[in-house]
Length: 161
Image (cartoon, rainbow, N blue to C red; front, side, top):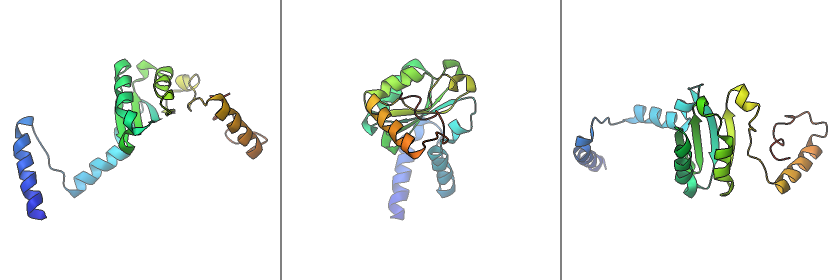
């Protein structure tokens, strides 16, 4: 296998040589790169970015990302074959909660606002609003599990009731 890999690597480098500088990532650098991508390091380490976590059917991921880019200059990372989308937004654009959530509600997705300044958090529900049936069921489960309402009061059910 090693000679085959070397030959294919050489052929690929020659094919792409006119595209600009290249770097071959060996085990350490490759591990660092893929860890940074998996952990969304660029978005996590930029505290100025609003951070959304979207869960959508994988076949819809690219369409959702393209739609978001039509109304913002978002930084976007994909995982789960396109089913998990991390979206980093400039605070100048606001949370874009209505826009993002309306895009994904019809396809069975949901959005969670992971990070935002307090002024945006105070007017933007963290979790995707639930449809009335699911919201009522969630409220009954929460009432039975936490009758005194001491666990995470008002956080999860606000969006659905």
